[in-house]
Length: 71
Image (cartoon, rainbow, N blue to C red; front, side, top):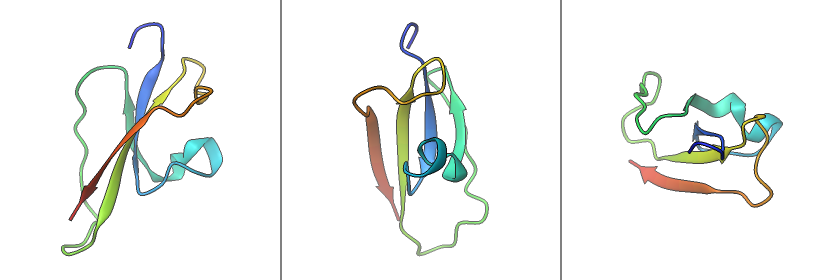
């Protein structure tokens, strides 16, 4: 993503302060990322959201994200 920024991986939300950083599992500028699900309970449904963020930690004019629901 050189020249575009990096990405944040959020859990369930990308709204609020700093695009939902309170729900962030982490951030990366590479193609791989390892997250941990500690604290999530069996049977819960969650949304994993990968959000492209600019180099200055600001969201792009048009949100660029991808979402996956996990059970």
